[in-house]
Image (cartoon, rainbow, N blue to C red; front, side, top):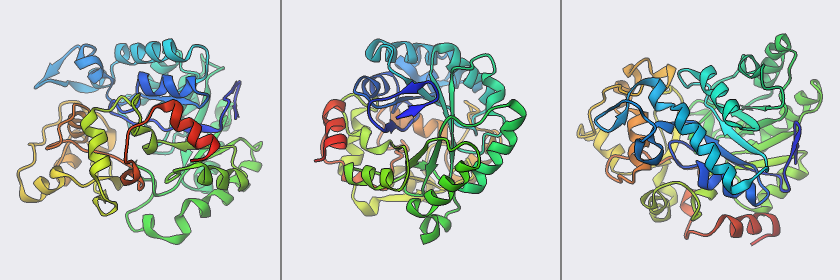
Length: 357
């Protein structure tokens, strides 16, 4: 799979998962095995027991600069490089992040070869990579209309996407659709891919990557046959030894059933998919941890206003999940998370994805 100046052996991108689910161990191992490993830039102040958060309150990173720690991100990418060498390595930076531009620049300085951005339409993404022309830029979209808007806006920077990820409504975490639209036939991944491929032809025919609910080689082959250049998969990589998630996080998924995986309200203003655990029940009965904005992580939350409205702080609850707190953690997963029944190596998983079960 060729994206910009870079090429991977296999047409598989490992999706970026924060806080601390896809950091150095997972991303470096995936790139080593011929896929595209992706480091998440979210919550890097939690890295290595928070040694990279210069300011803490109640053991949590305080404010944007500490939650999105540059030192933490640099260390993560450096450690991933020790695993994968010169193989391509990407960084996922959510557009909803406070200080988005600074984080993108930090990732470029740290040596990321590609920047992937979703959770919004990144109309000014190239503005922050002007000094790094070799860095490939990959927006995530959920419609041909979004791709058209991005391409039009990027013309002012004399830049077009090096690839585009099309994400359907079965992915983990935040969705690019309303709650109701997530269940409509017209918005299924296989139905939105075609129009995006056609729109891409108007702008130079950049590679299209399918994402959201992809599980095995049959799924990969399906989207390659539809005209995609590759796929992005996140959830299935949680079930690997190298995944940076806490063992309790992996166990939550392995213990879950299909009916436990639901769409929740989120402070970001979009529905988000995860495993229903004690957190959701405690929100209903009023015993959930008190919401107090400390990290100031995402702009749509409006410094905790939306967090209070939905009953939880997303930075705090993802941080708790990263630390293995099954009582108060928020455990994001795609719709297939319940299918993880054991932990295997990244090498074995890549063999299954490329050669079949």
